[in-house]
Length: 210
Image 1 (cartoon, rainbow, N blue to C red):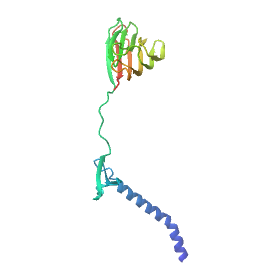
Image 2 (cartoon, rainbow, N blue to C red; image 1 turned 90 degrees about the horizontal axis):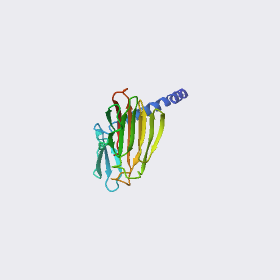
Image 3 (spheres, helix red, strand yellow; image 1 turned 180 degrees about the horizontal axis):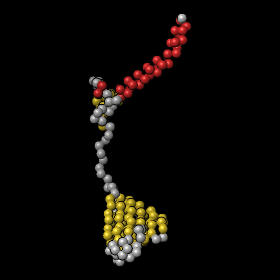
Image 4 (cartoon, rainbow, N blue to C red; image 1 turned 30 degrees about the vertical axis):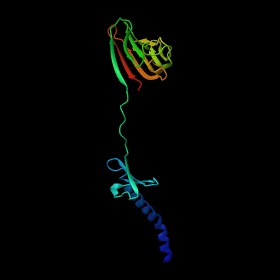
């Protein structure tokens, strides 16, 4: 009789332990559910003199003792200042003309020309901004009539691409007259399109230096 009871107890004990473990886990989840609180604030107490920090759950009624200093902070910090970000520009160039300056940005000149059957985009350093000799370089790729090719230039003269839909994509850094020791960094993507004897359109996306 007693042996049967002991055997039954042994068979049930794993199920009992599993039930207890589940209850403890649920209790733990309830205990931490309000950290941070509903407003996203984490509450803590710092012991005076020793600086030992402990997190408390104010929604469960926990408070700091007289020997502790209450400290609280937001789980999510305040937003930082708005960065320079990227922006886009669109330019229209009449057909049959020479290269014209579309824009000057961060020490670079962006030019475009509209031919009868193709268009040309060109990026070069701005001599009024960039120091002579140019300390720095830009790299990326260009797409034109000769296919896609890597680009690397570090002196005046720039780089160009010619085609029905030419593309220049460059990034890099270079010194300027205003700040000759620390290069500015920029990314510039520009694509031209040919209108078959009509005006050409050039679309640019620029991420200037901060």
